[in-house]
Image 1 (cartoon, rainbow, N blue to C red):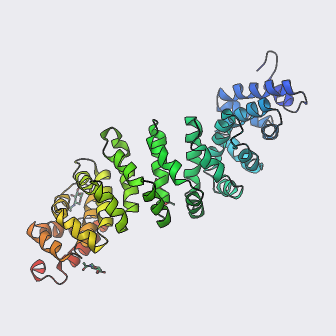
Image 2: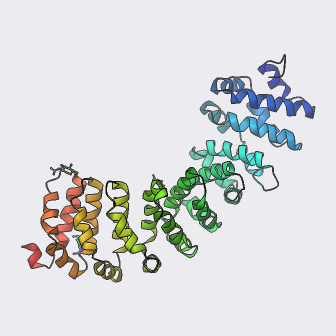
Image 3: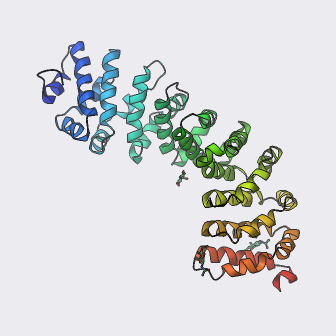
Length: 373
Ligand SMILES: *[C@@H]1O[C@H](CO)[C@@H](O)[C@H](O)[C@H]1NC(C)=O
Ligand SMILES: *[C@@H]1O[C@H](CO)[C@@H](O)[C@H](O)[C@H]1NC(C)=O
Ligand SMILES: *[C@@H]1O[C@H](CO)[C@@H](O)[C@H](O)[C@H]1NC(C)=O
């Protein structure tokens, strides 16, 4: 606080008409709020929120900037978030995401929205006020904090179907893919998590493929420095693998071999089970099953039936069921002693695994006398 000024006085100054006083008052509020949650809550009690929400739209650039810094810091507190929900501030914040605003404004405006966007009503408000286009633009901001905050808001928005489609229609996929190359792991993670959600849509997957999405993910999957990202990257691959065009892209780039290697990566069950899910996706077309059979996928799957992790075993049984559509695969599973391995899983206490194993046996034995024996 400026010398001799209490927080209460400074809050009163937020309603003063003199611009240089407003600049200083906002700055003082920001500094005071930054010191901790107790200070933020006391500012709330003193009525600082309403004037700050007005000042973020002030004509004076410096006032706007300082008011945003104060509001952004305050908005990270839960009580203040609740209070902000009752003030109709989201349209004014979105209005200040335009490219002519200062990076500092972008930084704190997106911080506010990131905090608010976990709430359903706020998400709707952000979408209804056309928040997505400027947020997509900010994914390419030179400032990593702005990038991260914008991505966090977009991740929260795409939890809803309508926003997933809108993100694709508004050209959000290329900048999202660009963020996979970020130097900041937190940005890479968030970009992958967002891609995981949006690639559940077929049109989005087509764009993903056209924008070299698979190649970009394979770069991540081939780099052991990024092993933290592998499980998430594989989930995105699995989402987009169902059509044969995608498989051709993956296969041409040596991706199928890479997937098999992943499947056998020891002691990393999440990666293994996601890689098996990819294989099961690939195996959905008969053309692809033939290709997988030629690559000896059955041998890999039989090995996985004895891995300790239950989700790996379950995913493997599901892949076995699908591969059983290919007649030669049924014989391979028998020759590799896969059948007793699946039978043994029927004893397991996990219902999901039992169900998957039963399904696999039903498929392996269907129309195959030797397997039934
Ligand atoms: C989005 O992806 C996350 C994993 O990152 C998942 O937990 C969540 O259920 C997904 N949401 C939707 C709506 O698909
Ligand atoms: C069921 O599977 C889990 C995980 O592989 C294993 O730890 C457990 O021993 C199995 N239970 C039985 C009865 O085979
Ligand atoms: C596997 O079993 C399911 C359900 O019984 C059936 O719909 C599917 O066609 C079977 N697949 C094969 C390869 O027999």
